[in-house]
Length: 135
Image 1 (cartoon, rainbow, N blue to C red):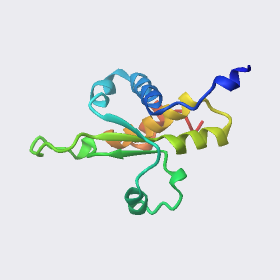
Image 2 (tube, rainbow, N blue to C red):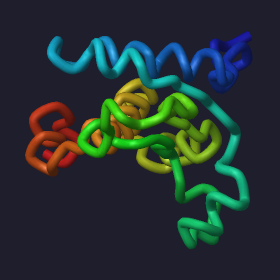
Image 3 (cartoon, one colour):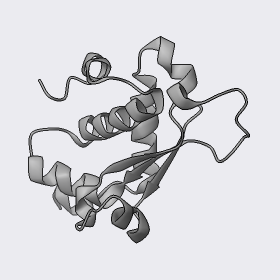
């Protein structure tokens, strides 16, 4: 029996663990605020989300920030739902398999960092300092 015979794709819980590891890798000044964002993993984005974003192929959306960026929050705001970063497992696995040049962990870190950028209201320069994905 080869190692391939025992391998399976990571499930939602394993992918969520990868995402939390990505948060641990953020610079110290961001970790506390990042820890306030919930991480959720679903197989795909819901149809209504895809429709709202005008995405026809559910494999095109690997992650989504659902919340109010810190740059837009006010102490006068009424508490609402928690900010959430959604990871879409099947599109992430599909992108990882089609790329062939990054580890699954690297891809998850990239998706989490990109979605966290929406939470912090980061500029492209801010993102590039944290996530060297495009180099």
